[in-house]
Image (cartoon, rainbow, N blue to C red; front, side, top):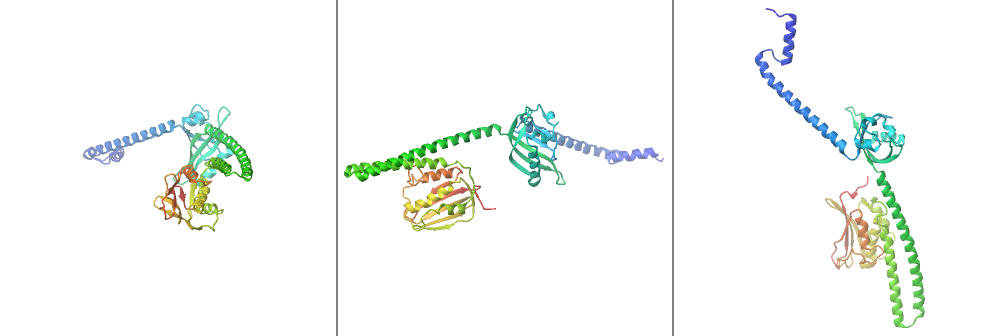
Length: 384
């Protein structure tokens, strides 16, 4: 008996659904279908859990998160509660009704950020000013990253926002307080130095006039005490300068060469064999180099000072090696008051400690002094 047209269609459809036409094959297919459905349900459940975790994370972090379109005005697509609260909005839905440009105090700032983001793909810790609903403004640190589609077109701008208004105010207040203290210290130090000069002048006149040996001895002791006071006052000036300027990358060879320019090259032969490195340090590093070289001239009885760099597996050494008498007593070498130099080893160690640069003396007494400055990985690099 032949099949009708409708029967034929139903049979074809049934085969497409179950893959096979007879009952025996259908029974073997159902377990596979059930297993596939079960796997699909598990995958959907895992995806839902992942989305819930992501949303929980975004909503509970204590910094603002925003996603917006990368167009001229651009809609805000998503924002977490912290960002909404920053700008004075009640919830995300209220914030999504405005354009991304509208939250900037200076809308041209966003256009500039978009241009830069298209070139670099990421912008880190950029200071921008956002408008708040009540008419006030907040200063924020903004980090942006671009999101692309499969063809490489930017489709989103994801931003992480931190309100740094109070932090900047505290930093500025601290800066002003430090400026006032430094000014007061500078004026006071200047006045004391002037009085020391006057006192030294009177002592000089008295020494010229007094003939009694015992009285001359007392006057000379007084003069030495005045000079000691002067050295202590100058020490406060040197110590005050430490850490005032922000650390940065400087060229090792250039700073080293400039630091030893004032030294008398007729007393000691200088040999500088330093590779080209950039080092991250306080700008006063030049005074450290000067002090180490000056101490060789003043204390070591050396005829040669060799300055080299030695790069090992995870650090860089800048080595000052002389051929003098060496250092016998090392226990107080870097302690305050152990050196008569204007920029003593104590100050040198303090300057280096700002950026965690180590210093040590590894020479053998009688075979010259060897000072090593220890730069860890990340504190030095080759010039670009």
